[in-house]
Image 1 (cartoon, rainbow, N blue to C red):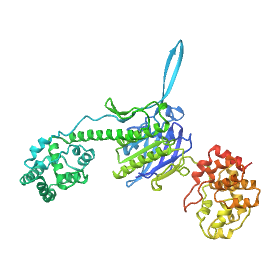
Image 2 (cartoon, rainbow, N blue to C red):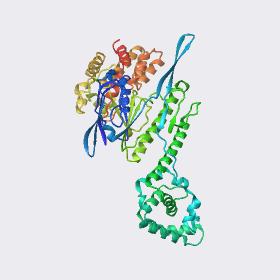
Image 3 (tube, rainbow, N blue to C red):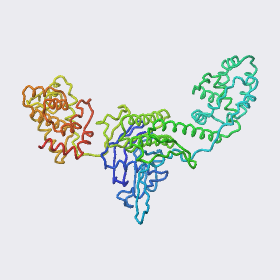
Image 4 (cartoon, rainbow, N blue to C red):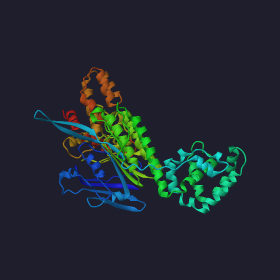
Length: 583
């Protein structure tokens, strides 16, 4: 399955958003947009999807107007074809096919009003909302495991039975048994009678336990081939390789004990055992995990409150933002593992990771990757969407492999999508023009050259081979950009490098040093060289490195137009470029 388009109407700051982007399952889909665009509104929209409709708080309606009815539409395609899923205030087709979970900030303002001597004093604080991991804890349910009773039922050679109480309450094992084995068939005479015959043969073996196990090893394959459901049960146990139970004989003996325990139980009762065991394992796992990431001075752990499993947090001001965010993220991701059950799942993460330090960012990415890998292993389509104002193409804090990462830019810009300038970069290593490109096109050089014939031979815009004409092109794009007209973002990168290098070059008065400046590789390194000569470099020139340091080493087909436009549309950056290029 793929999600090919998303449309959102009338949710908080979003009047209408049409996103034509192909989301592939089990990848990290990053939606990049500037602050104020509506990323939080996107998250609120998906969080408002209940089982039957969009249930949106009135304060989250667009402009607070009850006439602005919210709508979310998903265009999806799979082996059944393409179709549109719609959710509004009357229906929810999305939840028919998708489980949806949203992770966002859990901060909530709280306050008290007190009166002192006739004066009213208000006190406010930021609280972190408790995280409810499990809405309803299952009732305690276990197998009635008494080994002495099982020994008596087995017979003379019960010495080969191990205490497997821990194994039979393993939730992974129980999940596989419930989904793959016909429990009712295990109770029928056509299953139990051959099992008893084989058991009598086992009890007829003389000698120590090792002799009995050897007999079972030699005969169990033949027995299992003739008994389908016992074969399934034994193979499932054997595949899990429990310590001490790795042989097929040992796995069969565990299966026998399970059959005896399940005989008086209905499938529903076995499911209750599974649900309780699954809860216990989940509770222990979450306790360990939260403890591992708890660097605060507080004891933070899941607790049972009114049949719910809850994590209560300290006051927001009592722990750092980074501590709060990573602990909150881990807890909510653990909750997502409980809530996401369908074959198709959507996980939206709204900026909770944007301000984490490097170490916690690695932790964040590890847990998300682990969740994705778990989905792949279980054959689930997990569409994870990260909403952020940080562009992964400019910041190295995202360490996901390229094959797992897809970046989309939500805001549309008034830009020229022509690839003509990109084609120059694609040919950067072409031997016939490599030296000229590096010296005269990608950086400033006071001399001008004309290699139009070489450009023409390579299918590039011929006239741009004349550096005078190339400069007119890129400087014209700067004027368009500063005047609010359509522009080519890549031209701004080219031009800004040249303008800054030219201005610094003109500040150097020694001819030998000027020549040395031209030979330094990289704009930033050129600035540092000039600075070492005692030249005072405006701090603006370094700050604009976010634009001119954009890598101009691209493989054929790679496009950096949108990432550059995302930065160039920042009003502060635009003002800095104005000061640099027009003064």
